[in-house]
Length: 126
Image (cartoon, rainbow, N blue to C red):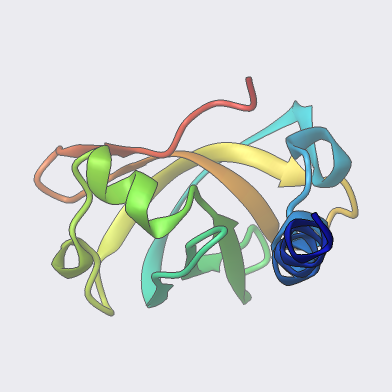
């Protein structure tokens, strides 16, 4: 019995970092602040628990702002039809998503439209 308890304790300890690292959509993003813009991919980071896309966007004053777009986990994106080769640096994307609560250039991605019209979906806050 003690061996089982030790095993379960170890399992809980090893998984606690991933549990604590994840967050709810509403903790970081505001569903009442939808964003929509076009930008150029500077980096795609395929990772878990969330993959990230970084794009340069020209704002209303002509300045270039690098936006960080949080998506689902890499394995979820693959199940949704995304492929690592879909977003090479320099790809122009039309973006829809939700602004971060802290008003930084960070958003939760809902969908990205490629130059050929193909849409890549990441999901909704629900």
